[in-house]
Image 1 (cartoon, one colour):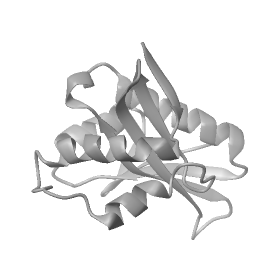
Image 2 (tube, one colour):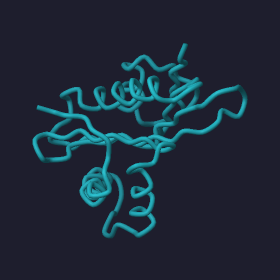
Image 3 (tube, one colour):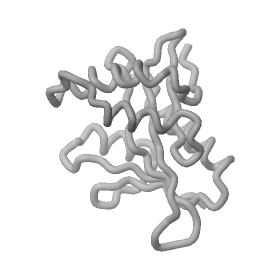
Image 4 (cartoon, helix red, strand yellow):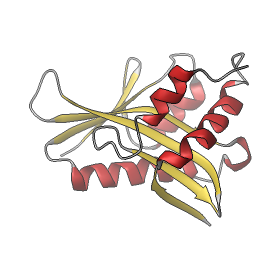
Length: 149
């Protein structure tokens, strides 16, 4: 059974390994740099950088990373999904959807004046575009946005 929970500092190394396996399909990821480690380490316990894990038993099988910022053109707060990753062995089971839906739910209940949730994608990544469209986000050039009411 898949459980969704907040990221803890002790999860960072496992998340980096999961990310490296995912990225190695596209890029040479021989070494994880200290910069990547520092970037991942900013999420645990950070209220302006919410992040969630999908856990199957005691195995981390996915994560979603987010950042909050004041919207530049309107009042309120915008959330940007920085990255979402699901282990190849667990894809196609709705885990990515659950991560995003849980993140959305938590953001809506805890962030005052939340206006939008968005995610940027590579314009050639048809799988990512289909994923965000299936979640009901509107497509704007290279960004998918959930306008909250």
